[in-house]
Amino acid sequence: KTKIKNKHQTSQPFIRCNFLNSVFEQDSRLGRSHNNLSRTKSDKHFQSQQQGSKMMILQGILYSFLLLSLSGTQAFTPTNHVVNLRSQATNKNSKRSSETTSLFAGEKGTIQILMSDTGGGHRASANALRDAFNELYPGRIEVDIVDIFTDYGPFFPFNQFVPIYKILAEYPFLWEFTFYSGASPFGMWLNELVLEITCFEAFKQCMIRPSGSSNKRADMVVSVHPLTQDIPLKILNNVDSNGKSRTSGRTTPFATVVTDLGGAHPTWFNPGVDKCFVPSDALYKCARDRKVEPEQLVQYGLPIRRGFWAEPTKQQKQDNSPNKKNIFDDIFGNLLGSGDSSSTSSAAIKDAGAKSKLRENLGLMDGLPTVLIVGGGDGMGGIINQAQALGQKLNKKSDNADEACYQMVVVCGNNEKAQNTLSSNDWGNGVNVVVNGFVDNMDEWMRSSDVIVTKAGPGTIAEASICGLPCMLSSYLPGQEAGNVPFVEDAGFGTYCGNPEDIAETVSTWLSSPERLQSMKDAALEAARPTATIDIAKDLAAMLFEEKARQEDTNRAVEQVLVVS
Image 1 (cartoon, rainbow, N blue to C red):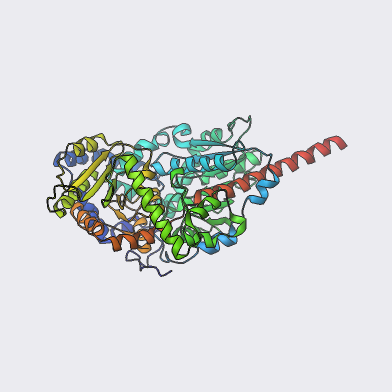
Image 2 (cartoon, rainbow, N blue to C red):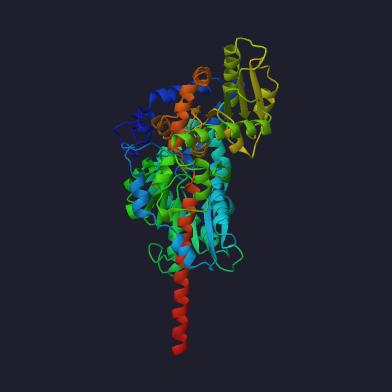
C-alpha cells in the first residue's frame, strides 16, 4: 500500500524535553486554523473565558505535573509513522486463545479494568471489551470496571480529574502546558513519584477488593488509561510478593489496551506489562521507543462499541489465519462474499439497500447526499458555527430549489444550547436538516451518512472508518489529538480544517462528487479494523485462563505437600 506523505511530519523527536519548543514548533497551519475557530465565539463567552483563565493558569501551574494526560488521547506521531509494522506485530507476537479457552472450558475468572472518565473513549473501550467477553464466553468472565481516580483518589486533585479535564479542554494553552510538561522525562518522573507517595495505599484498596461475585481480588488487571500503568504495576508487585517489593514479584497478569490512535502520551507504555495492545503503526513505534519489546506488543486496532462490530475488509479476511477465526467469521464471510466482481457488485447493492432502510427507520430522506456533524457526548468543537455555515452552503448550492437536494444531521450530544439554537434555525428549502441531542445509536446515524464532520477523537475516527465515512476533522486538543490528523490524511479518507466556512466549502465539494466520495470511502474501509475488539478480547481471555491454570497447578501442588506432610 502506498501511503501519502505526512505533511505534518518533522524530523523532531517523539517527545521533547522542552515543552515550549514542542508547542510553538507544531504545524503552523493547524495552530492558525484552531485559533480562527476559537475567534468565532461570541464576545461575551470570550470575556468569560478570560476571567476564568486567570484562576486556571495558577491552578494549572500548581498541578500540571499531576495532570499529565487527563484525556489519555494522542500526542505527536513519531517520525517514521508510516513504517508498516502491523503484520509483524500481529503475526509474530499475538497468540490466539482458542486452544487455551477450549482446554479450560469450565474455568471462570475475573478481570478488573482500570480507567478514568477523562473523555468518553476510556469507558467506551472498557465497555466494549466487557461486551466482547460476554459474547465470546458467556458466564465465564466477570468484568469489574472502575474509575480508579474518581472512586479511590485520596484528595484533590486526584479525585477531581474528570471535572478538571473538562475545564482544561476549554483552554487549549493550559492543555498544552499540562501535556508537554508531563511528557518530559522530569515530568514523568515527578508524576510517578507523587502518585506513589499520595495514591499507593488508596489505589491498593481498589485493586485488592473482591471482584465480581468472587470473594477475592481480580485474577487479571487491564488498563485502558495512560495513568494506570506505573502505580498499578507497583501495587501488584507489592501484593504478589506479600509486601516484600514494589519493583518485582508480580504474578497477576497485566495488560494495557491503548485507546489512542495516531500518537500517544509516553505514560501509556510501560515495559513491565505482559501485553500492550496498540491500534496503529504509529503507536507500535511509540511503544518501541519506550522500550516495550516486540514480544509484548500486539496490534489489532481500537476496541469499539458493539454496534460497530462490522464485517472486515477483504484484505483483513486474507490476513486472518485459520486459527484466528471467531464466532463472527461465518457471518462476515456471508456478508462479503468471495471477493470477485459479482460478489462485490452484490455487496454494493446490499449496502445501498441497508442504507435506505436505515434512513427510513431514522426518519431521513432517502437518495440525498448526507453529512453528519457530531460534537461528541459533550457537544464540543464549535458545532453551532459549523452546522450553520454548512447548512447555508448546501442550501445555496441547491440554487434555492423547492425540494431538498442535500441532507444534514447534527448530533449535539449533551449540549442543550446547541440543540435549541440549531433546532430554531431557518435552513431554507434546499437542505433537509435533522438536529438531535444525545443518541445511543450512533452506528446507525453513521451508516446512514456519506460524510462526517467531527473533532479528531480516536474512537470516532475508528468507527467512521468502519462505516466507510470520509472524515472532515474540525478541531483537536493540542498535543493530545494532533497525531490523529496525519493518521486520517495519510490513509486518504479525510482532512483537517478549523474554519467553519472552509469546512462548508470542502464538504459541499465532496458531496457533489460521487467519484471522490467513493474513493475516500474505499480508503476508510481499508484503514478499518472492525474485528479488533473481538481479537483483543480473545487474547486477554487466553491470558486469564492461563493464569487460572497456573493457580490450579499451584493449589494442587500445595495440597500434595500437605498430604505428604
